[in-house]
Image 1 (cartoon, rainbow, N blue to C red):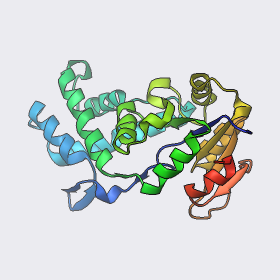
Image 2 (cartoon, helix red, strand yellow; image 1 turned 30 degrees about the horizontal axis):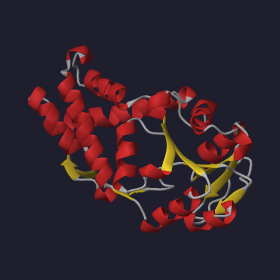
Image 3 (cartoon, helix red, strand yellow; image 1 turned 180 degrees about the horizontal axis):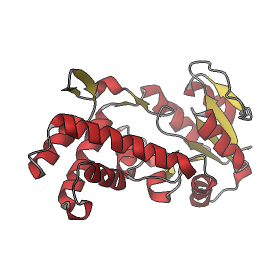
Length: 248
C-alpha cells in the first residue's frame, strides 16, 4: 500500500462553513451574519456602557489584528489571546477580566460557529471507507481546539481519527512544518507514508510538500493553481474521488 495514513484539513474540506447560518446582527445601518450579538450580551453584563456598535468595531478589529499577526510567521493566535485583544481595544484591563467571562465568550462563539457548519452526509461514508485501510488524522488551522473536536463529534466521525492536530494546541499554523510533523509523530508514520487532503493550495498543498507529504487538492471551483505552488499529486472536485486514489 502506497500510504499508511491520510491527513485531512477540516474547514472547507470535510466540513463547510455557511456564514448565512450565523445570527443576524444589525448595527449602524449594516446587517451582518456574526456571533457578535451573542458575545455582546455577555460583555454587556460585565460592562453595561459598551454599546453594540462599539463592541462590533472592537471585535472586527481584534479578528483583523489576529490575522495580521498570524501572517507574520504563521504563529497561532489562540482564541483566548484574541479575546484579550478585544478587551484591550475596548479599554479594559485584560488581566482583570473574570475568567468566567472568557469561558462564556469561548463557549458562545463555539456554539454559533458549530451551528454554521455543514458536514455533507457522504463525507462520513468516504471517511469510513478510507479508515478501513489507513490511519486518519485532522490537521487544522483553528484557534480553539474544542470547536474542532465538537464538530467531529457532532458529525459522528471523531472515532475514525487516530489524531486530531489543531494549531491552537501546536502553536503553529499550516503551512509551517511543525503542525504536519506533529501529526506524523502522533500517527507513527513517515512523511512518504502519508497523504494530505485539503482545499488550500497555498496552505495545504504547499505545506504538505514542504515536509515531503503527497497532496490531494480539493478544487471544487476548478480554480487555477496559484503562482509559485508546486502542483499536487492529485486534484479532485469532490471527496468521493478520494477512495479510488488510496485504493479504498
